[in-house]
Structures are given as structure tokens and as C-alpha cells.
Length: 454
Image (cartoon, rainbow, N blue to C red; front, top):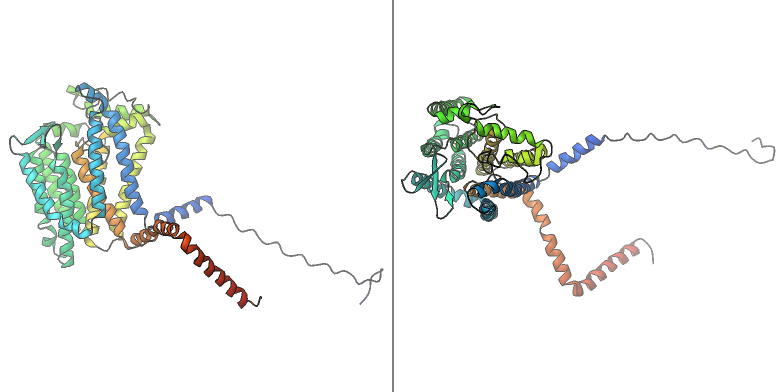
């Protein structure tokens, strides 16, 4: 081997290592999408959406009821917080109903179906008895329960139809009878039409539309064929057309769709001023309590048109937030109905979701001038204890169904014992710390000996 000039062997240069290629950076949008997808797929997502969304809607509704009803209360020579206090009392009672419903087992919900249906029918009949029924805004659908409190039995009829219809279809599915069209229709459709008839005797077509939507939702969930579904829909549309055509008031409401002028005799006054309220709100509104339309210009500002006052005071950001909460609630209800294997849970969850979603769409569509004014409140948001109580019980149903999912039940079971374990560790820390530490030291010593160390 030839040497160098110094007599030392030549130094061999180390070969250059290839530079490793940097991994490509992940797209932040894709990473965000993957994380959001994982969050949506968690077992408790529907549970938290239903619980959190419903509570947020109720709390925001209480704030807007207080803001929108002050002027109306003062005009009636009442305290400014009169309507808010009644709504707050109804929300407290509804919260108790929500908690009870969320803790009740499914078999108890099914046991309540027939008593609730019978009670609703009985109260709807009492509404038509002279001296018992009370007329409000031309519709006789109320019963006075003493003092300033009134009850609207048709609101409880929605909940009764959901529970009874779900129990009926579930029992027929267990017996494999839903493949025959007569078992799918009878007695569900006749009973629903009986409830519709009792409601229409009082002139409340808005509630009748919601009840029809619940009926169609149950039929769709039960797998009704297109011909059968179309036949029932055609009958309902024909009856609705006759009822609208024979009523000048309903024809006037239909003519106010998209109106920008009050028209002759101020026929479209409410619809137009609802648009004015939304238009004057801008992006972020004029501020909480600063609405102008609630000073007598907008009728029913704290009930049917509270969404317009929300748009005026909280702006587009406030109205979109309300719509997003209802969208999340609807998604969670559909998810509960789609992931369960219990037919009763599927029908009941689907019926409740159809009820709340359809009512919200009809109310918001009327305020925006896209649909005729039906006189239905915004669920969990508008003033009205008779509408709030059954709706919160229905939300409790969804929470119970979301908790009953096997994956959600397992996730809740893993989270619940943590607090108990911590408390047990604190209580027995004096006596348990020694043995636990000694056992840990013994495990470490045995591991050290097995490795050959002394």
C-alpha cells in the first residue's frame, strides 16, 4: 500500500450520506377536516350536541323573550319582566321534565304512549266545550288553568303522536306486519287525522301542519312505498287547499309571501315589518334591547316573530348562530335515529327530529317571507310555556336515546368512575400509600434482578 509523503497511510474520506428527503407537509385544511371527522364520529357526539344545543337555544331564547316582551308588557300595564318570569318558570319546569325523561328507560317511555294520547284527546275535546275553551287571536285552542296561566293541549298532541306512533310501528315491525300497506296505515293515519280534526275545529292550521309533518316522518321511517306516501300526501294537500281556499284570513296570509309593502288595509303589516327588522340589523345588530320594531310596530314580537327581533338586535351573526344550533340539533337527532337497532328508538327519535326541524323551518320561513305566516312558535326559543314543556320533554327523549347507544353507554361508564376512584384514593391514602409504594418497589427490584444487576 503506497504511503504518503509523511509516511502515514492516506486518510480515507468518508462517503457522503444521502440527504433524507423531508416529509411533505400536511395540508392544514385536510388536517382540520380529519380532526373534525374524528370528533363527529365519537360515541358521545350526539349526546353532547343534543344537550348543549338545546340548553343554548333555551338560554338565548330567555334572553330574547325578556328583550322582546318588555314593551308589550308595559303597554298592557304589566311589569316589564312579566312575560320573562312566566317563561323562566316554564323553563325550570321543562328542565325537570327534560331530566326525568332523559333518565327514564325506554320501556317506560313506551308505557306512557297510550295514556298520553288519551289525555291529549280528552283535553282537545274540552277545548271545544263552551266555558272551558279560550280563544286567542281567533283560534280556540286553549284551556284556562287558573290566573294568567293557559294550556294549549294541541302542543302535547305532538308529543303524544310521536310516542304512540313509534310504539305502534315498533310493535308491528316486531311482528313483521309493516310489509302490508293496511297495517302501515291503520290505525296510525286515522288517529292522526282525528287529532288534526280536533285541532282544526279551533282554527289552528299551523299546529295541524306540524302534526302532518310528524305523520309523514313516521311513515317515511317505517319504509312506506312511494305510492302509499304519495297517496297520503295528496289527501293532505287537498284538505289543506280546501281549508285555505275557504278562509279569507288564510288566503291573505298566502298572498303575503315575499311582500315588501303592507298592501291594502295593512294586510301584510306583520310580514313586512318582520323583514324591516331583519334588514335593519345588519351584520352584528343594533345591540341587545335596542330593537325599534318591538315598540308596537311588529305584532307578536316575543312569540311568532321573535326571530325577527333577534335579527334586529343581534344581526346576521345572531340569526346564523340560532340556525346553526338548530342544524346541530337536527343532525344529532338523525344520527341517533340512524345508529340504533331498536325500532321504537328509531321511530321516536325520527319523529321528534321531524317535529322540531319542521316547526323551526316553518317559523323562520314565515319571518323571512318565504312561507305564509302559520302562527307557530320557534321551538325552545319563542315565548309560550305550553310549547316549551312538551318540547323539552322530547329533548329529554333524545338525550335518553343517545345515552342508550351501546358505544355511548360504554364511554360514559369509563368516565364516571374517575371521580369515585379519586375520592377513594384520598380517603385511604394513609393506609393504602404504604402497600402500594412497597409493591411498586418490589416490582422494580424484581425487574432489576432479572436484568443481571445486583
